[in-house]
Image (tube, rainbow, N blue to C red; front, side):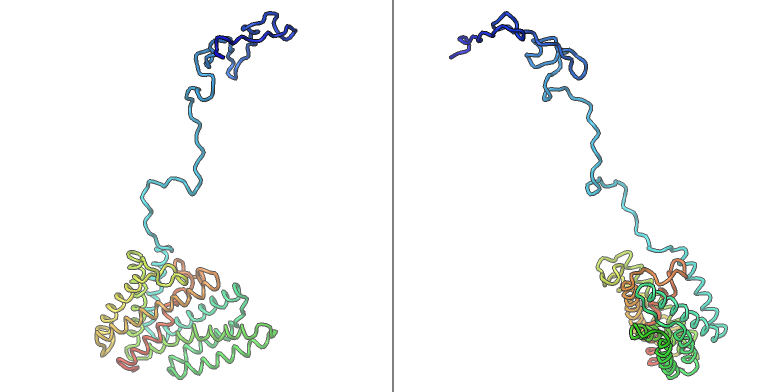
Length: 357
């Protein structure tokens, strides 16, 4: 069957149809489109175009003004074309420098005017450090290390070390530990072992280690020894920060302190050894430059370990700083972290190199 043989079937007459049958059908009613136009041109409609000459079907619609695309999700957001921000220190450097200069002025003034005044500075630092440590232990872990016997015993420990040397420091340490045990007996026995263990640890960690600074002061060149101790520790920390900030890539202990790098440790060792050679040559009586190299290496290692040790404590407690007393630095304990374990190392090496007199 071809197209010429096709004829439409008759359509019965009725109210819904025209009387005339055949290929011509009843005209479609004029229906306006969504834009208000009438499709009154059947031929145009049969050709698939609108009455005004435009396309009838969606696929043939003329290009319209594009709708604004939704913003991409955060993970696919375009990168800012601006250059990446420069590295910045995590603390307020102006406040940190100001506080550091102020502390340095107090320390140097007390060292070279009256030695006993510097011993008082050590006692104040020890008591405040104990207060910060015991407060954080109680706040974060519920550990009640007794502060009163620790503060009194810590002050006595520093003074005993200055007056009677290492023997006096050990006796004061033992008495302080005993006082902690007895003082805690006045409270209920629950958590007694935990509290007294933390108390004995605090007594050793803060005042006992600080006693070696007072023992450094007892030598004839005591002020110079204390300056050497402080200077090497500060130079070690500064070298680690400067080199690590600029060249640090390999993490030293990412689980403890993610900011420390092996490159920073190399910088700490290099800076401290150079400063140690200069200090032993020009500040310490009978000192030799090569002894300063050994001293600087030991200080860099002990200062780094001390910093990591306190970082472990702060991570266990879930805090960033031990306190807020020193703007830009945190608390007293945040400044003593490197100094405390370094003090006995410096005292021991200087005693071996040039004696304790």
